[in-house]
Amino acid sequence: MPIKIGEQPEELSLNGRRSGSTNEGGNNNGDTSANETTAKALGLHLTTPNEDLVQRFGLDADTTKGALVTSVDRRSPAARAGIQPGDLVTQVGDEDIETAKQAGEALAKQDLSKGIRISITNRQGSRFVLLKKDEK
Image (cartoon, rainbow, N blue to C red; front, side):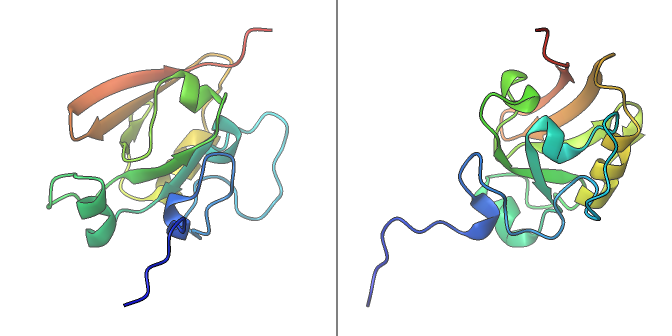
């Protein structure tokens, strides 16, 4: 049986590389304004969870709703907030999240300069994180 070493599934791309997922959060039409907050601008690569990904990241087997973080860009607002691959975004602001597309739409409505509250669930439990714009 041939074994390939060093290959990683596209949905678990290395930090800083774009995932091959078509469910990635943010505005997929390429037309983004300077003030629009997208998952990509925050350093998040999201996909809607499926049975394989839920098992791979050790989440509850009945997890079907939310946006699964598949990778986080280094030095991004998401990385600074402690968001990691395997985290499940379940709420953005006051909006419950059921899919990666919905997460992208909810993030686009937020103002990063005021901070964005995100509810995260992972195998350790649930928590809130606050994403903020860089203070430079």
